[in-house]
Amino acid sequence: MSDHIVSAYDDQLNLINTNLIKLGGLVESQLKNAIKSLSDKDTSLADQVVNDDNKIDDLEKEIHELIYKVIAMRQPIAIDLRTVLSAVTIAKDLERMGDHATNIAKRAADLKIYMPDSPIAEIASMASEVQLSITKVLDAYVAKSGELALEVWDKDIVIDKSYVTIYKHLLRTMSKKPETIPGCSQLLAIAKNIERIGDYVQNIAEDIHFIVKGEVLIREASNEDDWETLE
Amino acid sequence: MNKEKISANNINVHYGDKQALFDINMKMNEKEVTALIGPSGCGKSTFLRCINRMNDVIDNCKISGNITVDGHNIYSKDTKVERLRENIGMVFQKPNPFPKSIFENVAYGPRIHGTALDKTDLEEVVVNSLKRAAIFDEVKDRMHESGTSLSGGQQQRLCIARAISVNPEIILMDEPCSALDPIATAKIEDLMGELSKDFTIVIVTHSMQQAARVSKKTGFFHMGYLIEVGPTEVIFSNPENQKTQDYITGRFG
Image (tube, rainbow over all chains, first blue to last red; front, side, top):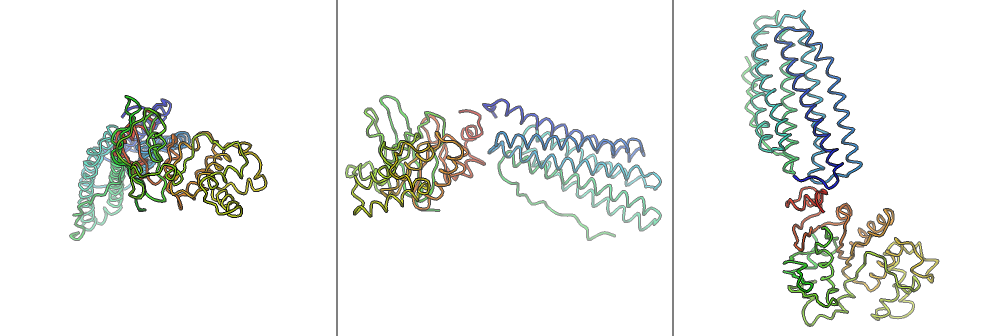
């Protein structure tokens, strides 16, 4: 797309854009570190994740201020309006994703509780799927690619399925070995956090679709989660 | 949706050798505001002036195609241009009240067209027109002062009162607010909303926000072509054509 006649307008939009990408990068590394702290039982890394959450909160506020300014000064319309409106929700969603990463780290830091290893490995693998989706959704945002955004959107079903599998696994473990209940409950909450992050990624994919196509994405998710067969 | 009032069919306009409009096809609905937007020289004012045959008076201007109002071709031989312009009022960019009293400015039309029955009727027409143009309260005690003594915004509303005094069905407005401050502009825009209950309004505007605020339908002109026409909310939120998008978002002009 060509530039605006008023170059200061482009500068403002570009600044919002680069900050959003920066925010996405922060969230990526927070989730990565949160999971690493869980796998490696590294409490200092977990603490670092908890402490770094304020960087995300600050950047989100900064982005909101920039958006507020550009709306007041430029009254964006059409694709520009969709871009700034979506930037509000994308920033908000990224901030929430950061909160979930922090919550994972808080739970991971609780070493007094015994957590079985095998579900941790499953959780780490689910988290790397989500990591991949975050990277892709940020790529889709940079490229303003509706197609790539749809690809990411569709991927959420895989993440949801992993969650159901982990959920069932943990439930089985808890019923067989009641002494694992405290640790498994933590892992259950961690898995839920990751699953929620996946949902926010899906929201961002919807926003990208809206920016590019100018219409709200209406897409049916094939819901094959089989909660009935829980043993 | 309201019924179709004006229909332009394959309108081509030449000024001498230069073609100003290319195959314009556009429909405008009754009792609705239609906005024409586009950069300077795009042909939007030329098109507006085709609707009341104002271009007829320009020597080297040639027009082909036709425009119908209520299905009647206004370019047919049996069209009486004076009668046409009585039915299609016009408001210009710069307020142009006659150097006469406020009362006479509005009484002029009904007087020359002979539409007022007597003096009382004429007075009633003047008062009603001023009321409908939302300026009566501001001028009721100074009806015999000169129209040119009013502020710019008031003068423009006086011109609107003058245009509607002969009870036209259509009002054409050529950048009616470009010489006015934001408050006077807001008053005119508010008035347009009110007037569109009774009149079909076609407005040429350089203010995209104004088009977005006042109109139901918008046509975007560029270099003599009608690039895109559609519901205003679509044109300003998600236009189909890249040129329209670039223009309304300030990417070229």
